[in-house]
Amino acid sequence: MKTYLLDTNIILRFSNPSDGQHELVTNAVAAILANGDECYLAPQVLIEMWVVATRPTDVNGLGWSTIYTRNVIEQLMQRFPIAEETPQLFPTWLDIVSTHKVLGKRTHDARIAAVMITAAINHILTLNPSDFSNIPEMTVVHPESIVSAG
Image 1 (cartoon, rainbow, N blue to C red):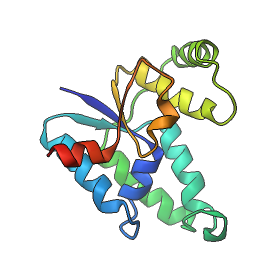
Image 2 (cartoon, one colour):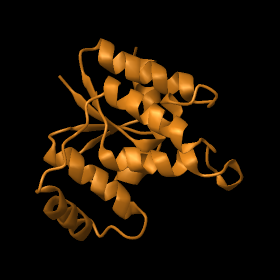
Image 3 (cartoon, helix red, strand yellow):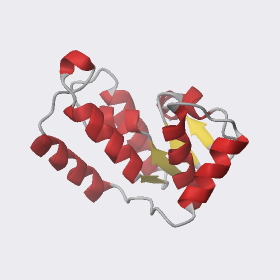
Image 4 (cartoon, helix red, strand yellow):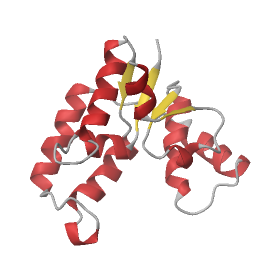
């Protein structure tokens, strides 16, 4: 069985039926689950989702209310398990950013990778594979590769 972490860009589109990539993402998640594999969330991803979901639309957000955003997050948490953040998370993150010379905003992606490594989740489903390309400890999967394989 494969395990997948759902990246922020995946859950944002999964949760937003009006998004142009909603169908692609929903079909990819459905295919993963139909194959008997598992999809996980990470607290970091849900925090990043909150940022984008509650940001006004005129600054590239969704403009959702805090009440609506919380309801969406609670629905996601009922549907998918949350990867546990263990005490090993910080040392793993520090090793990743040091070893792979991670700079700037990619630091957040390195934290997601650290959650995956410490929770033994081996794949990430993302629309931005290049965000994780410098971290060889994980398998990066674009939803199109799952949908086209089905």
